Length: 469
Image (cartoon, rainbow, N blue to C red):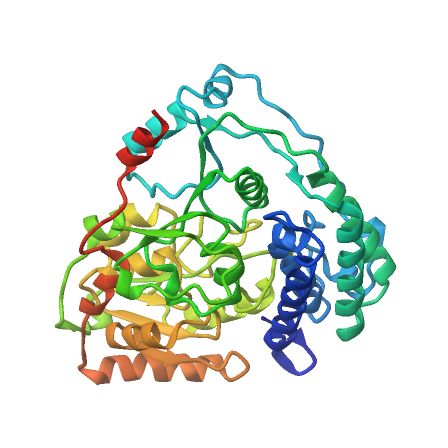
């Protein structure tokens, strides 16, 4: 992760964040000698700890933003430089809906539980999503069971001290106090038994999903967890996928073929079984071609598909740039490629608009209308563009870390250009566009198939419903 400082546009803090992650890993391994339960304080709050301390490391080097104080565990630049209880957003009181729809969702017609963020896709699997939400019991916000909480809190305090000392973070006593209360707000010393046979969850960076998963694992019940993004999670070589997205379950539902998946090394609570499924986006949008050629800008509609503006909700490693840096990058794109249309991101924080013409429709609804795509980040939108048989210019500005094998696939699919975010952006963009126009290259999307489509799908939704009967 990088942030603004001095004469540099950004300074690399990825190594510092990786050091924080390794410290948390070390304490997570050590606490297992004290706690015999499936979950522990570091496993449950791993991602939140990474968010908090990486946000501090990034934000203390970032120019002050007008963005409001973010919800914890994110922090503002002021907190990052001088942690204070006054700079933490107070948790909002829980509001439990009593609508008929909510009561139906929280009623189990079949004995299985449903967590958050299950990836059905935009306009995909309509009936499966309806049936799952009607038959399963949607879970209210819950607390996670933590046995021997006092020694676990002591270990957390020691971990926080170690991180603060290693990275010169001020006021470690304030940080410890905040985390002590945060853990107490989300944990319980008594495990509530559930009548549900198993749990179905999506993204395990979601704290509610992590708490649910560990509570079910503690009762030796099955946790069926889904990866997201319409492509195999193993394309990424990032810590988040080891401590979160590929584990915390008994059964993992992954995209693509078995050959495209990674081993279970260093996975936090690795799955017993891995099932494979097709990306529904790939099924509907994939246009196989090994002869994708460049198109003249003058005769084409160009769409730039960025990632989101994050406001103060920034973390690392390899995840996002501060908004001031990303805005500067966007302005350079508009100067060098004035005819490009900017795709708005539905999850952007605040009201930041692109510097030129903006496409506000959902990407799935408008992508067929464009001829050339410009990308700088790998996410679901990138997958969608790369599955088409149209040229893609991929400007690698240093966000995301891809596995070596998939990086090779990306370069085979796109006109790939590495950008130095601290360099002259206009010159680099002009050279990238010139090399695209002069290349007369041919690209292929054939190698993408194994990451999105399963030659023998081993996952079926109806098997989940049958299992609950």
